Image (cartoon, rainbow, N blue to C red; front, top):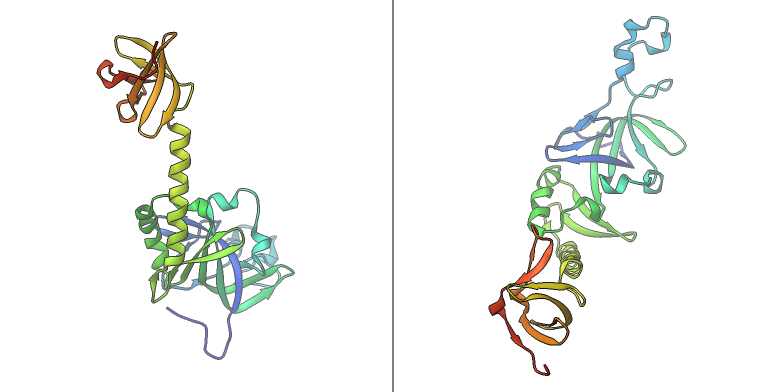
Length: 252
């Protein structure tokens, strides 16, 4: 990778990227390739001959002081936080060098390359195996990767060290909580109705471990193994076979 000259210290800025299967892209669609710095060019000046009355658009190197061209970066992450961004984009720090134009909240640079990546949890799948697959393109840039959570940065992948246990533990706990919540939402609950084949509809009275107590009709209490009850999508209801239950103690 072509890097900044040793006698020039690059500026560190912050920016957003689109994260795709093929790699990173700027918000305008410009690809960032692993191991290669991105070099700015002025697209407006390239088409200056189509608009001769715009003398300020004569071909020039980017960034130009009197143009808007260049690779943009902010001076802080707070300047990048806007509603909806965290659901589809990733944050990061970026190295800037070459010709640089400074503005109040950031810079426009001639060359840039990622320094680190900060991933909001919303952009990552829940399953760890899917996360590792998703990270493959990002790892190819050879930069540290962190997960953002409540203002903290959890190391997920370290250059030269691979996956970090701290970030993995956080994501594992996140996955467990997600599956627990999903099961609670989709699992059978007290008051739900179960269609008992050949008998009728029973109403769940109590769920105790692996068994369900459900009232059939006005008084018959059934004891049904939880794994014998399933949701039938085509009928939009819980169902069980007549052979899957016993009459519970206490029936009169």
